[in-house]
Length: 384
Image (cartoon, one colour):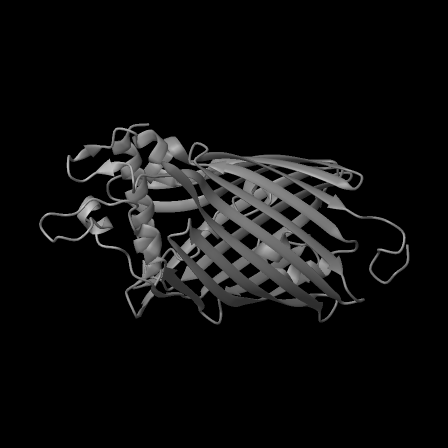
């Protein structure tokens, strides 16, 4: 990679910081403040287009709808790894959930989304000669930009049909040593079942998520910088890159209401047909190409699955439905399959992550595994 390309990579990372950080000494609404979580988790749910708010009833409910954790009978563990944007971004998800009492369940989920080996060329450019330093390769270092999230969920079964849940969320975002942010909020949720029918609702970030960014200005200082003849002082980051340093600040992520309805009908001998429809209702102003009323936008998702004797399952869905004058109706499908063997489930899905803006980078395979600890003494209620 040339120094020019490296320099652009560093500036891109700084631009992302500028977009995330908010105005200096103030607050602003962050339209994409927690979008690293928006791609979803669990290959079964993603194979159904992410229409899972009403259906979530296992460990991944800690993400989709914490009220669904109440349907666990045994402790469960899940993991998923995804490479996004042609492998440039890695995403990892791990979760564990376990019945705490006869009617209560606790779940913990951990997420990491990161870009590794971003080049740092701060000390590789000669501002006097306006070209790379003779030994520039030895002066290039690398860093990572990573987003972390921790969800702690609690579910309570109110009746045979109704369960409620709450999730406490903490976020940690960092761009090398240059800047970092902390965020926190909570979700509240409910799920209702009557026969084959399911209804679910989640209010994400009901408390409004606060993300407070701080910038380490010392990390931008140049080592052994030459003297700028115009100022008589050593060259600074602004002199070399013709860009001001970003400032810290507080960004607000507004609540999103996720509504879902579904049904799971018995078909034939031991088979099941499941269908679901979800709609996200947001007030963050992300109105491009989706149904909206003013700043209120609606993002529908549709999914279906056919389960064969509780062993194998085929899935399909529409994870994005948009319309624009330039491209017409845009339907983004997803497909998937799963295998359930005793206490282990393995699921696969394939879909588009970014849509029209970057379809050559957006397709992702998702593979997840889930373990149910069906062991004596671990069953809800303490008996087998």
